[in-house]
Image (cartoon, rainbow, N blue to C red; front, side):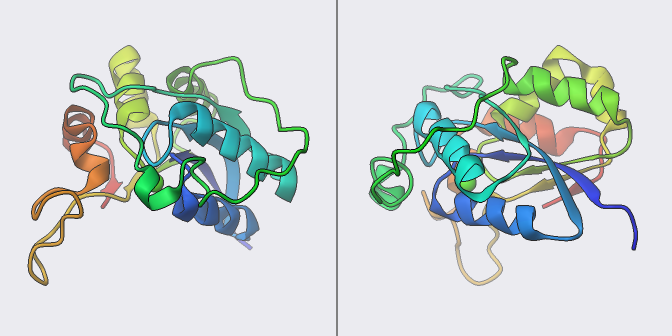
Length: 193
Ligand SMILES: [Ca+2]
Protein backbone atom coordinates (compact mmCIF):
# COMPACT_ATOMS: atom_id res chain seq x y z
CA UNK A 1 0.00 0.00 0.00
CA UNK A 2 1.27 3.43 -0.86
CA UNK A 3 2.07 5.86 1.90
CA UNK A 4 -0.86 7.84 3.24
CA UNK A 5 -1.28 11.43 2.15
CA UNK A 6 -0.50 13.86 4.97
CA UNK A 7 -3.44 16.25 5.24
CA UNK A 8 -4.05 19.46 7.12
CA UNK A 9 -7.78 20.02 7.05
CA UNK A 10 -8.73 23.71 7.25
CA UNK A 11 -12.32 23.95 8.33
CA UNK A 12 -15.25 25.80 9.93
CA UNK A 13 -17.34 22.94 11.38
CA UNK A 14 -20.18 23.19 10.47
CA UNK A 15 -22.22 20.04 9.92
CA UNK A 16 -20.80 19.11 6.52
CA UNK A 17 -17.24 19.76 7.65
CA UNK A 18 -17.76 17.63 10.75
CA UNK A 19 -18.74 14.76 8.47
CA UNK A 20 -15.82 15.43 6.11
CA UNK A 21 -13.42 15.37 9.05
CA UNK A 22 -14.68 11.94 10.07
CA UNK A 23 -14.45 10.58 6.54
CA UNK A 24 -10.86 11.84 6.36
CA UNK A 25 -10.13 10.20 9.72
CA UNK A 26 -11.64 6.93 8.52
CA UNK A 27 -9.87 6.89 5.15
CA UNK A 28 -6.97 4.50 4.71
CA UNK A 29 -5.49 6.90 2.15
CA UNK A 30 -5.27 9.91 4.46
CA UNK A 31 -3.06 10.68 7.43
CA UNK A 32 -5.03 13.49 9.05
CA UNK A 33 -2.20 15.26 10.82
CA UNK A 34 -3.83 18.59 11.53
CA UNK A 35 -7.15 20.40 11.78
CA UNK A 36 -7.06 24.18 11.55
CA UNK A 37 -10.16 26.21 12.25
CA UNK A 38 -11.54 29.36 10.69
CA UNK A 39 -14.65 31.47 11.11
CA UNK A 40 -17.56 30.83 8.78
CA UNK A 41 -20.26 28.25 9.32
CA UNK A 42 -19.75 28.85 13.02
CA UNK A 43 -17.95 31.44 15.12
CA UNK A 44 -14.27 30.68 15.56
CA UNK A 45 -15.01 29.68 19.16
CA UNK A 46 -17.74 27.24 18.17
CA UNK A 47 -15.88 25.92 15.12
CA UNK A 48 -12.84 25.17 17.27
CA UNK A 49 -14.93 23.67 20.07
CA UNK A 50 -16.69 21.46 17.51
CA UNK A 51 -13.35 20.22 16.18
CA UNK A 52 -12.20 19.53 19.74
CA UNK A 53 -15.44 17.69 20.45
CA UNK A 54 -15.19 15.52 17.33
CA UNK A 55 -11.57 14.69 18.08
CA UNK A 56 -12.45 13.64 21.61
CA UNK A 57 -15.58 11.68 20.68
CA UNK A 58 -14.11 9.77 17.74
CA UNK A 59 -10.50 9.34 18.77
CA UNK A 60 -8.87 11.50 16.14
CA UNK A 61 -5.16 12.08 16.57
CA UNK A 62 -4.87 15.25 14.48
CA UNK A 63 -3.48 18.36 16.11
CA UNK A 64 -6.06 21.14 16.33
CA UNK A 65 -4.95 24.75 15.86
CA UNK A 66 -7.32 27.70 16.15
CA UNK A 67 -7.22 30.16 13.29
CA UNK A 68 -8.67 33.37 11.96
CA UNK A 69 -11.66 35.06 13.57
CA UNK A 70 -11.99 37.64 10.78
CA UNK A 71 -11.31 37.87 7.05
CA UNK A 72 -8.14 39.55 5.77
CA UNK A 73 -9.73 42.82 4.64
CA UNK A 74 -13.52 42.82 4.67
CA UNK A 75 -15.75 42.84 7.71
CA UNK A 76 -16.75 39.43 9.00
CA UNK A 77 -20.30 38.36 8.25
CA UNK A 78 -22.17 36.67 11.09
CA UNK A 79 -21.74 32.88 11.26
CA UNK A 80 -24.26 31.04 9.07
CA UNK A 81 -26.28 29.81 12.01
CA UNK A 82 -29.42 29.68 9.86
CA UNK A 83 -27.82 26.69 8.10
CA UNK A 84 -25.72 25.04 10.81
CA UNK A 85 -27.52 26.05 14.02
CA UNK A 86 -26.32 28.35 16.76
CA UNK A 87 -23.65 25.85 17.86
CA UNK A 88 -22.55 24.93 14.34
CA UNK A 89 -23.63 21.30 14.73
CA UNK A 90 -27.32 21.62 14.00
CA UNK A 91 -28.03 22.49 17.63
CA UNK A 92 -27.56 18.95 18.85
CA UNK A 93 -26.93 18.87 22.58
CA UNK A 94 -23.16 19.18 22.96
CA UNK A 95 -22.09 16.17 25.07
CA UNK A 96 -20.58 17.06 28.42
CA UNK A 97 -17.22 15.43 27.81
CA UNK A 98 -13.67 16.63 28.13
CA UNK A 99 -12.69 18.36 24.90
CA UNK A 100 -9.46 17.55 23.11
CA UNK A 101 -6.80 20.22 23.69
CA UNK A 102 -5.74 22.71 21.06
CA UNK A 103 -2.22 23.58 19.99
CA UNK A 104 -0.84 26.85 21.32
CA UNK A 105 0.09 28.06 17.83
CA UNK A 106 -2.18 30.07 15.57
CA UNK A 107 -3.39 27.96 12.65
CA UNK A 108 -1.20 29.86 10.18
CA UNK A 109 1.91 29.22 12.27
CA UNK A 110 0.98 25.56 12.62
CA UNK A 111 0.62 25.28 8.82
CA UNK A 112 4.00 26.98 8.29
CA UNK A 113 5.73 24.70 10.79
CA UNK A 114 4.22 21.52 9.34
CA UNK A 115 5.04 22.39 5.74
CA UNK A 116 8.66 22.94 6.72
CA UNK A 117 8.70 19.77 8.80
CA UNK A 118 7.29 17.72 5.92
CA UNK A 119 8.44 19.48 2.72
CA UNK A 120 6.52 18.45 -0.41
CA UNK A 121 4.36 16.08 1.64
CA UNK A 122 1.54 18.18 3.07
CA UNK A 123 -1.80 18.45 1.28
CA UNK A 124 -3.86 21.44 2.46
CA UNK A 125 -7.55 20.69 2.15
CA UNK A 126 -9.57 23.85 2.76
CA UNK A 127 -13.32 23.62 3.11
CA UNK A 128 -13.98 27.04 4.58
CA UNK A 129 -12.77 30.56 3.97
CA UNK A 130 -9.15 30.60 2.87
CA UNK A 131 -7.98 33.09 5.50
CA UNK A 132 -5.61 30.80 7.43
CA UNK A 133 -3.83 29.69 4.28
CA UNK A 134 -3.49 33.28 3.06
CA UNK A 135 -2.10 34.32 6.44
CA UNK A 136 0.45 31.51 6.28
CA UNK A 137 1.44 32.54 2.73
CA UNK A 138 1.92 36.16 3.78
CA UNK A 139 3.89 35.30 6.89
CA UNK A 140 6.17 32.80 5.16
CA UNK A 141 5.97 32.74 1.34
CA UNK A 142 8.72 30.11 1.32
CA UNK A 143 6.08 27.49 2.12
CA UNK A 144 4.40 27.90 -1.28
CA UNK A 145 6.76 25.65 -3.28
CA UNK A 146 6.95 23.20 -0.37
CA UNK A 147 3.23 22.36 -0.24
CA UNK A 148 2.44 19.14 -2.08
CA UNK A 149 -1.09 20.11 -3.07
CA UNK A 150 -3.96 22.44 -2.19
CA UNK A 151 -7.56 21.25 -2.50
CA UNK A 152 -10.36 23.79 -2.20
CA UNK A 153 -14.10 23.60 -1.69
CA UNK A 154 -15.64 26.89 -2.71
CA UNK A 155 -16.72 29.09 -5.57
CA UNK A 156 -19.54 29.04 -8.08
CA UNK A 157 -19.55 27.99 -11.72
CA UNK A 158 -22.27 28.60 -14.27
CA UNK A 159 -22.27 25.02 -15.51
CA UNK A 160 -25.95 24.48 -14.80
CA UNK A 161 -27.27 28.00 -14.43
CA UNK A 162 -25.93 30.22 -11.70
CA UNK A 163 -24.76 28.23 -8.72
CA UNK A 164 -23.70 30.71 -6.05
CA UNK A 165 -25.29 30.19 -2.65
CA UNK A 166 -24.83 33.77 -1.44
CA UNK A 167 -25.53 35.57 -4.70
CA UNK A 168 -26.06 34.13 -8.19
CA UNK A 169 -22.31 34.37 -8.75
CA UNK A 170 -20.82 34.05 -5.28
CA UNK A 171 -20.34 31.14 -2.93
CA UNK A 172 -19.85 31.60 0.80
CA UNK A 173 -16.28 30.35 1.19
CA UNK A 174 -15.04 32.73 -1.49
CA UNK A 175 -17.14 35.83 -0.84
CA UNK A 176 -16.52 35.39 2.89
CA UNK A 177 -12.86 36.28 2.31
CA UNK A 178 -12.31 37.16 -1.35
CA UNK A 179 -8.83 38.60 -0.76
CA UNK A 180 -7.63 35.36 0.79
CA UNK A 181 -9.20 33.37 -2.06
CA UNK A 182 -7.42 35.58 -4.60
CA UNK A 183 -4.07 34.83 -2.97
CA UNK A 184 -4.63 31.07 -2.77
CA UNK A 185 -5.91 30.77 -6.34
CA UNK A 186 -3.05 32.90 -7.66
CA UNK A 187 -0.16 31.06 -6.04
CA UNK A 188 2.15 28.73 -7.91
CA UNK A 189 1.14 25.54 -6.14
CA UNK A 190 -0.85 22.61 -7.53
CA UNK A 191 -4.44 23.52 -6.75
CA UNK A 192 -7.52 21.38 -7.16
CA UNK A 193 -10.76 23.35 -7.12
CA1 LIG B 1 -17.02 24.53 5.49
